[in-house]
Amino acid sequence: MIIARKKPIEEILSDIAPYDRILILGCNECVTVCEAGGKKEVEVLASALSLYHLNRRDKKTFGEMTLERQCDREYLEEIRPVQDDWDAVLSLACGVGVQFTAETFPKLPLLPGVDTICLGANEDRGLWTERCQACGSCVLAKTAGICPVSRCAKRLLNGPCGGSANGKCELGADTNCAWQLIVDRLKALDRMADYETVAPIKDWSTDRAGGPRTVTREGIQI
Amino acid sequence: MNETVTSQSRLERILTSGRLAVTSECGPPRGSDPSAVREKGRLIKDHVDAVNVTDNQTAMTRMCSLAACIHLKQEGIEPVLQMVTRDRNRVALQSDILGAASFDIPNMLCLSGDHQSFGDCAQGQNVHDLDSMQLVQTACHMRDQGKFLGGADIKRPPALFVGAAANPFADPFEIRIPRLAKKIACGAQFIQTQCIYNIDKFKAWMHRAVDRGLTERAFIMAGMTPMKSVGMAKYMKTKVPGMDVPDAIIKRLSGVEKKKQAQEGIDICVEHILELSEVPGVAGFHIMAIEWEEKVPEIVERAKLFPRPAIDE
Ligand code: SF4
Image (cartoon, rainbow over the protein chains, first blue to last red):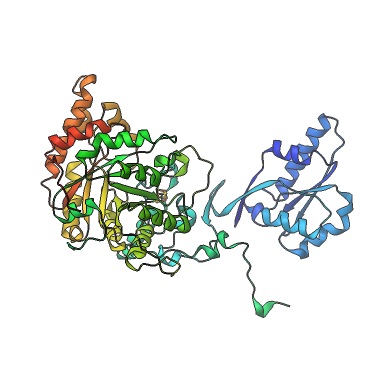
């Protein structure tokens, strides 16, 4: 899923400063699971902002709404009847949701309430970690199911670098070395010989480098 | 070993002739004054066969490696152009290879480079379009096929002697030899190792490299860095990833008074070179006396590596 983190409150306060009536818009998908932008977080942020502005006698009002998804026009339509009630929307969805909401309502100012971090997994309670960078051409069959593109700080396809020590990346003790994980798994799978296959130069045109990416599936297009 | 040479490299000729080669290292300055590079070069000129020029080492922005190589070359010193894959994509890497070849810089060493967070541009992007093995492949492809990665012909392909680095001590341990084999399979003709302090472990690694026939296919140069003090030894042991400094070295350095530790460090280095000169498969030494270049001549002379052989052009 997409992992996001709440934006620093100072940044939110500065972004909403020009507006009086602000709709805080949550999303029921990824950001709910990673506890950054679901219904619960919308409630908490709305009360914090209301209280803050009440104390300062600012006349700001905050609304709360959480959609099933912000990356789907069908659900975004729920905003249409109330769009004129608000000066701006503070969306707690990922960057996709914020943009799709903005595209759907061209006259409504949209502000992000979270920072979108990565494609990751819920590794432990309160811990989400990156697993994929959507490079557009999956190498996992060749790397024992562990992704060096997203998990190696140098995205080495023929790793490790000389900085790998005791299972950790040269970045420090908080980061596992992806290539140690790959080697461990090759060993567990009894496939150590595979290590010596040289990974060819990668075609990064399916990655960010190739420009915005699109998937079309003809059979289901209308 | 293949007797045909692929470049005008003096380093390649000496290695191919079976004599122990000696290289050293020069870090370009954090400024545009070329005298620093030239001065470092002059200090070691007569005692080494070639000098590696580091490429924004530890991700600190410095004068570019290629420019510093040209300064050395103008001093009559043969450079080894170090190239990391951190800062340049395949367009820039191929372009710099051609730029180096246009000055007839004959050697290059392919590396991935320290992560940018260690340097002065921690907020910068890293590139890593290719990795170090793919850079070795790219250089060999340009030289041997006379073609760009994109397929077009290169007018006057680069004549290069291509190398890579190896760390006999890094983790994961079980892939130390497979990783070396992989680099050589990609085309690496010479290997310069990480600084060696754990002689026994290095010998065991070397033994396995010889057993696998890798020393028949590439020249392995042992990396040597003299310790300046016990403080440096402790720092290397605990703070530098992938460095193996045995306690015996630290004990020996702490056994002498502070102002004699540097000399003790040089002595250890000389003893190590003399010992490793006898180890099958060791083709030469890469002496990295960081900001201590003036000591290289003493080390080379005492390690019986002087005078350096003359090579007919
Ligand atoms: S230590 Fe491992 S994860 Fe970190 S950059 Fe090197 S190979 Fe990649």
